[in-house]
Image (cartoon, rainbow, N blue to C red; front, side, top):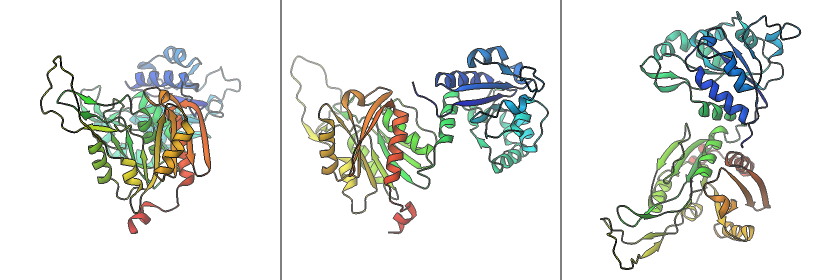
Length: 404
């Protein structure tokens, strides 16, 4: 199970139908080992009960500024003193106005004013309320005050209308929370990443592919976004959800992936080749479905292009990171690949860890030797890989690259 970077989080719930999403968020946070304290407004209690949130968080829920369970009677002070952050989800238009104006007329608004930690909000309201100039003025003021905003999302709303104002889904909010803690080691950098398998057509219904799920490449794309990078993700067929804020280009074959990579390479600081590209393609795929019969089917195969080698051998290549999956002699074979392709950094793992699972082990290979990363979630490994890479990057920026 992935461990969150947060240890203690105070979750504030205001009046809105999106409170049901907060229940799921609290469940996910607790599963990741976070100590969650819940504070609810009186309006929030009309949508979801304190008992529900107590059952999910495993801790008492607070709703009253004058709660006697706090020994010194100062719940608005004591509840925030040892938490990493406060998240208001959902944050209603009324509560956002309170925060912007510095009002403190209930427990949640008072502890937000008296806090000694970061404050984050996940807005949730009808689209007209979100678009109202007053709400937009309040949001601009909160941003100026250093309050982090997650969302809102666009889509169907409880009122039946469609537009901006939906609160982010629980899993998306969880990703945003983790991203808020990541150091912006890649701010100003532009990354091009490949992920997933390729599919080489045999006929209109069949093809050659592999077991790559795309999880590692997508995790690296998300981690790069967390660290402040601008990300273009070139993905083969994968069921992974596209990372928010990344430019995602879907391809099928190795030839398509190569063409897309070369078309998107200009101005990129880093190229990370995570995709499991098929080694061969069918020379003459059938334009119709091949009918099954009792005869042996022979396919003529030709080698696919080496996308990483094509990029690494350019006159002025970006910083290139490769991946290698081996069944044996991991470090020996991976280091041979790194040197053969003249790569500054290569991540290697065993084939049994490479495809499908949520956890893996990696060994990072560079000119200074081997750097093992112990078994962890692919999200954690992605952050560790990018942190290692960030220390290796030249200080040259994308602007400098374009000027050369």
